[in-house]
Image 1: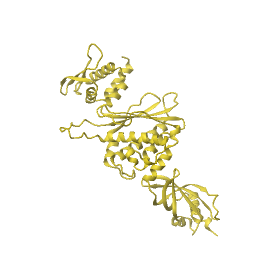
Image 2: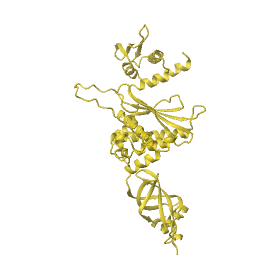
Image 3: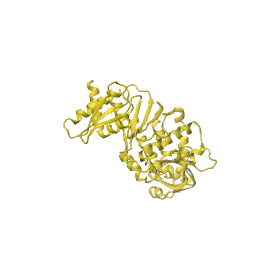
Image 4: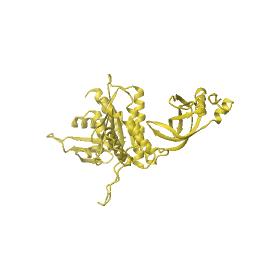
Length: 397
């Protein structure tokens, strides 16, 4: 064995535990032949096509001086028997009691790397995606705003992990651990409880499959009960964020389900979102936002980041749209606010002097943007105080 290959198995040995390897063997046609509790296990590969049945010894006593080299030897033997390298062995052992989710960024790469900022944005989007799926799984009626169920935070803090990358373009590996196997029901009428981590991953797979279907053919009925299909605005938004780079050809999303649990009826084939389908994601998200964020009266307080003059109005008064950045329910939004007359003048003043602008109206998400509509009221008291006069210059006769 080459030095680099041996180093790879040593790295895997530092990642895995003997109990995880034992669970893998028990799920893959290996038979436990001999056991010395807390010392060692001897496993026999019953499905081997070889004339001599292979056996491996898995050391259990981590406090023994030779534990690490013996554990590395066992892993190397398993890799040789199954014709896997160290990375493949690690993936399969982990997959015994963990669901794996692979996100492949299909784009041209000269040296197998991606821009650092793209990696950071992809990880942030993946966190948003997992949080959205966990929220839907924990509470299908949750608004995805404000406080999340405790199960969501526990899942994000403990059970979901970032795994090793895979070969082939650039692949992020998300590991969703199922935990130790619970006791089997003693009564045949009892149902095995599905781990919450598995519920999340099934919700995610269903949501991704539904999203792709909607980008191919619109189905308004899907939005009547989106959570039933794993859909949420956060889920779709995370896909948009990952697919922003123009040089990205497609997002390839696939699942490998834990061998220790039953295989679900979703996530069985790779979900490919090419540029044509990615272009349809904003329409899907807008429809979901309308359901999650019904029109409501809101007061915005924040800077005016841009002003767009309206040349189409027939009124002699100044008119235009102010882009106000404000925090609403913990989210920073860029809101389009149509204004006329004195209100438009106050917005100009706030923009030029970089002062907070306060305005109230009906907040909604329309035409791929947040907008204020209805009876719009501008609170100019702060601006009046700062300016030292009653009305802005545009309001003077």
